[in-house]
Image 1 (cartoon, one colour):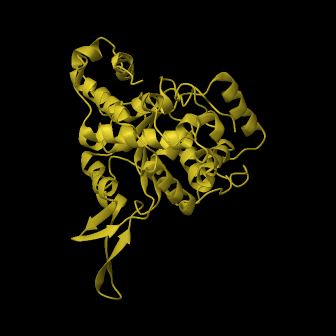
Image 2: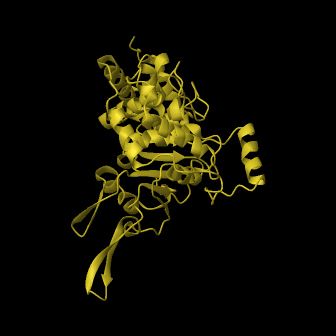
Image 3: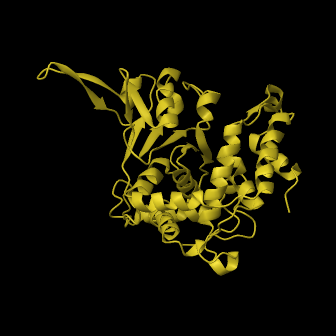
Amino acid sequence: MSSQPNSYTDSNSHYAGGTTPQGTQQGSSASENGHGHAAEDPARQSLLNVRAEVGKAVVGQDPTVTGMLIALLCGGHVLLEGVPGVAKTLLVRALSTALSLDTKRVQFTPDLMPGDVTGSLVYDSHSSEFTFREGPVFTNIMLADEINRTPPKTQASLLEAMEERQVSVDGVSRPLPSPFIVAATQNPVEYEGTYPLPEAQLDRFLLKLTMPLPGRAEEIEVIRRHAGGFDPRNLAAAGVRPVAGAVELSAAQAAVAQVTVAPEILAYIVDIVRATRTAPSFQLGVSPRGATALLNTSKAWAWLSGRSFVTPDDVKALSLPCLRHRVGLRPEAQMDGIQVDDVLGSILASVPVPR
């Protein structure tokens, strides 16, 4: 698997919405980063192997795969944005296969009801009692396809599941499986008949990852695979196999928790977040929850990079995917064609970097 030293990138700039930490490589050795055990962690190697397995089915979306892994390491949810046909569903299926996790897909439509997602009480004529029938939310990775096509009432049915990892029906709370994350998709170019996600729900997504169209060479590779008989519905035939599981993921989460963060790095994160609240182009800045998300994802990225400490470049690398959906442009800025990522890029360039 090739390393991408400066491209945990999508079409924007930093991390999985941009660049990797400057000067680091995903495959760097322990001797290179100065810590003699992080890079040799078998849990880390298992997670890196997952990227290679997903690459057997999905071409050119390594940054998004890495973003999904970071979300799993942090126990957070992901909003995937991309035009139809860039392998959003295939990516989630391949990732769950490589991690031996259960996944379910729900097509969000205007007539979808909350009970269709969470589950509902069903009358059993044999026992003359109501029993609970689990909905598709009872899984490890739930793919909420085109989440903005369903009304707010149904969107809201996911809030408890995303925040509390449980579903409450008829006064009874039922825990969801562990791990559990929501991978929600939305189309960035088609807004007719959609219901924009409210800020409260957007803020519950750990990351917003953009999935760009592939480059020419990557698109040729996609077509070549299909010409050779690749069937996206048959991952086993594509060679995608389980290389990690819940045990490895749990060990990785424990290792990420041990990553150290210096006080000046904590201050750097806070300075970036506070700068979004005073930016002239933003009418809504990032909340403390966003600062916590940036901290946790920076730790996960540092660990995946083979280090047991966070650098300022780790923070920069995760800033766009962590923050882009937590801010709101002023109407006049939208009319001027200003993009959220451009404003965030300016903030990152202006906030002093700790030395």
